[in-house]
Length: 436
Image 1: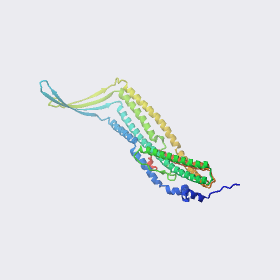
Image 2: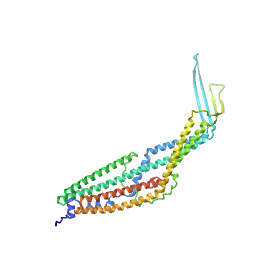
Image 3: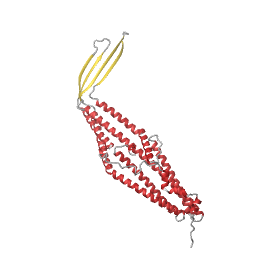
């Protein structure tokens, strides 16, 4: 009966150049956490600083602000329909006669026009302008939420990618150790050459995975830099399960309060009123008062003429322009109504499932953390057994892969949890700057 000679752990560690302290540092979560963890408040501060910088520089927000400013100016204009339209015209004329003498004439004219009655068309224009401002205000708030969500998701991806890189680095280290151990066991005749070669292949594959993760980090950073001139250094999650108090999500329980719903509601009202105004102004009479004063100058006996009168305008034919414009506005109103109904259904569904989704995300996160802890212990035990020659390279790789999958699952759970907190924050009509 042949007895397999086992190499003591101390001898293997000595031959591979790995100390007990290094081994403990790599595989002890407590020691590693104390060494690499950061203050959660610092992570939250860095996270919010980047979000704030993007909000200040986002081109979509600036564009929407400009649109809102234009709508507000139009609202002011439409609100002054009860005031007259006044103008002053000064004319200077030089006339050359055939006799060679010249004559200079100066004329000053001041006029004012005031609409007396237009069947409510002007008031409809004013109300439509008010609705337009309401829509653009809601759309600006929605744009800010969209920008916050976009940059937050990018930062979550970056944090996740950077932690994946650390995981991959740990995996490379483990694979390097397995190669060293396999090499020593192969040299001593305790391991087949095929097993040793497989260990080297696994080590090379781990380096490729690490490089891919680092490339992914660069791509995400570039995406963030396209939004603002920032250098994102975030590496830790801004929230932990113990730091978020699960605020009341019933603050904005009415779907009508969502910014997108508000915008589509105001859009529908704007297009309806605009269509009515177009119908009235195109086919109903208009009564206007006109007045003015003219000064012919140059000693004319007709200096300082005053005049006033009423003008009744009755539309007869406008080449169907009024009908076309009104129909176009009505079509826009129907499209806005369709968007409104879709937004209402989506908002209602989000509200009804949000609490459940947050609870499930927290539960999934806790479960993932427990799985990582258990699989880490199993992986460490497998490595010890491999060092003692009681486990093959294949079996070690299986346990290592299982542990890596669990860590990736934990990162996915943490990212999903953070994304739900962003949604929960926006449902409360709050900026995420107030929630992290």
